[in-house]
Image 1 (cartoon, one colour):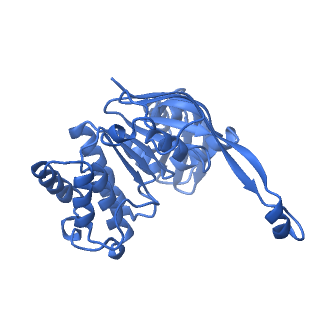
Image 2: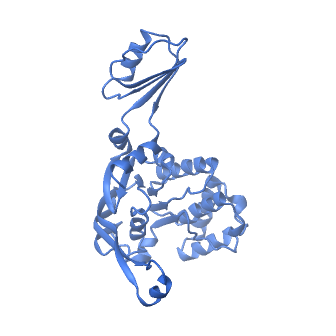
Image 3: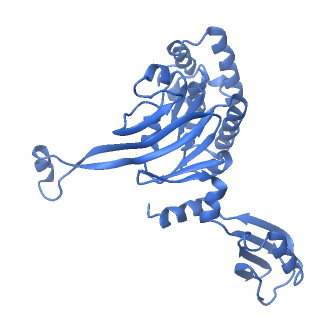
Length: 327
C-alpha cells in the first residue's frame, strides 16, 4: 500500500545576494539583488507502508526541503504530494495527527520545563486518551531508557539524552509515518547503536514507515534496505542499497596473513594485488570471480591465515558517487 506519493515536485527559493567590494554594506541598504535557487526539480517517488528508507545526498541537495514538504511545513511551487491520501499543506491538522517528525538540529520540547511536562502537553495537543498515553509512555521510556530523564528540564540534558526524548515525543501519538532528519547528528557511538536498534524494532513491530536523512552512511547501511539519492534537487537513484554498492563499489577486499613473504604472481580475476611482508591484499569483483574460486586458487600457492573478506568502505563509496555525479 502506497503511503507516500510525490510526483514532479518543484520548489524554488529567493536568496538575497550581498554586494561585493568597497561600500558593499551601504549599497546593500539601497539595492537588493536576489537569485532564484532551485531546491527541488521534478522530484518523484513512492514509499509503501512499513518501508524504512534512507534519503541521502550532499549538503544543499534538497533532503530537508523534501521532508518539510512531506510534513506540511512548506508548500511546493508545483507538483503533487499525497501522504496517506492527503495533501500535507492543505489538511495540516489531520495530516500531523498521523506523522512524527524529528529534526536533529531543532527541538519540539520546551527548553526550561521537565521533559514530562512537554510530553503531557503533547498528549493534549494530539488528544491521546490517558490510558493509551500512559501505556505508550511506559513503552518508550523503557525502550529508549529515558525514565530517569522525565523530571529533568530539557536544557540540562546531554545531546544524546535530548535526542532520545525527541524521538519519544515524536512517537507518543503512535504515528503511521516518521520523518527523521539527521537524528543522530552529534551522538556518540553507544547512543547511535541504541537508537538504531530502537528504530528497527519500532519499524518491525509497529509497522511505522520511516524516512531517514543522514550523512552518517553507517546508519543508512545498518537500517535502510532501500535508498533514495538526491543531488541538485533531482532524484538520481532509487533502489536497493546493494544495487547502489554494485554501481559504485563493486569490489571486495580479501586480506590474509601468509607464513612467509613470497614473490608476486598473477592471480586470475584480481583487480589489484598487494604483497606487504606477511600480508596479502587482493581487490576483486565477485561478479567476475566468486570468492571461493579466488580462495581456492590462492590456497594452491600458499597457506592462508586469518582470512577476511571486506566490502569497500561505504563512506568512500558515497564520496566516489558524489564525485562521479559532480554533486
